[in-house]
Length: 447
Image (cartoon, rainbow, N blue to C red; front, side, top):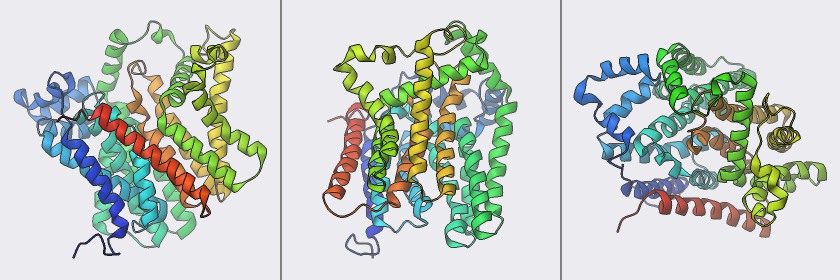
């Protein structure tokens, strides 16, 4: 019998709380009827079959055939989308908990995972319409993370996952890898899981091979899809700043680096919370002043731009201009200074992650995972969509940062007392703040 007082169900209370919060949030969501994206997908099946639509999209716009196929089917069924989207949150929490500890029965870890999930600004999922944005960005994230739980069974418990678990994981991977950014992230993750299992268990993970095959098939589809090229040409004609076509690859990477790092420190609530948490964890682990200063650099820069720049604007003139290093600005010292600043920012986060790791292998893998997340956002700069991209394109980097934070918190030894109370207050405060922010500014509550 289910009862919250039963110790058997206690570990699942955090996940249940998350589901209730998100379900309430979804009850007040509404898709604006004048939104072009919502109207477009809702009307697709009035004029053609689903197969005809997907073939047309493949030739003229996008390789996201799996995602858009489901999107068309759910575009007019808002209630069903709300239910499915709400259910994905507990799936995300359970999957993250399992990847972190090999179980979903750790109550403390489950609360930490739920708090971390609520720190993400889910209001960004309304930027292109709730249905379209979640199914193109959030669903691939959740299903991609879930797909990794199948090989994680072998990694943690030295036994093969159930056949149905593997089947569901492969199906989830097919959907997740249909999104270009997630496809790139999972390409690295699946290889890392395969190598880890081979090294630790001396076994070949056929589950990971199947997942990797799903990733590669989607990667081939993305690279060969004529619609992706057509969309890029149209975006070049209508949405980009003048001169993008004349940019070299190095210039595009420089623009992407500047845009990514600027938004991370100026708009990245998750980045600020994670870098502060990593700094505090490092202070608890070591008394080394050089290491502490390196770990302090990222949160200091984020706080400086967000808060102190308003107090001392004359000291932040260079940073607020954000000059980009290109062939045309190569002689400007300010452009070089900004480029070096952004490299130092990323290097400081990577170094902090490595300092916190329990072993060299663990440290290298987590650092590589962080930079894979960074690259998942940098690659947006190589396409004409950089100018119009919103913070939703950071979702994969943000959740990689949250995963790294959770990994280190779960393996840290925070002593009982005032220090632990302060950490709980800061952590819970960040989650509550972002949750309230999402409700107030994005859910559009009605009386």
